[in-house]
Amino acid sequence: MLSFYLIDEQENVIMDPKGFNPGLIVLLLVGGLLLTFLVGNYVLYVYAQKTLPRKKKKSVLKKKMKKERLKQGVSAPGE
Image (cartoon, rainbow, N blue to C red; front, side, top):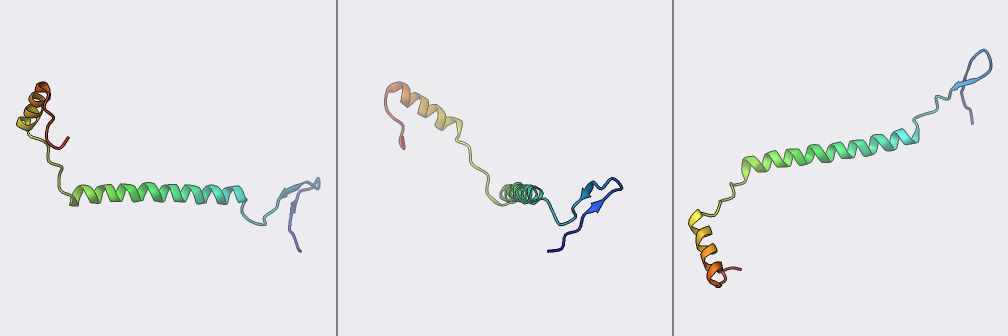
């Protein structure tokens, strides 16, 4: 196997230009996956905000009726 090193005047090895550091590859892979996940979630959130219907709020009358029934000891329907 042929390897190539850059050597300075004092015969110190400066660099081994064989390839990428394995830690750098893992960091780039994990960072890329995380970035893809976050961007994908944001895109889905924006799409859902535009396309899905708004959630209807309970009317004040229904809330008051539920409170009164609970005060009287009768459970509200659906509970």
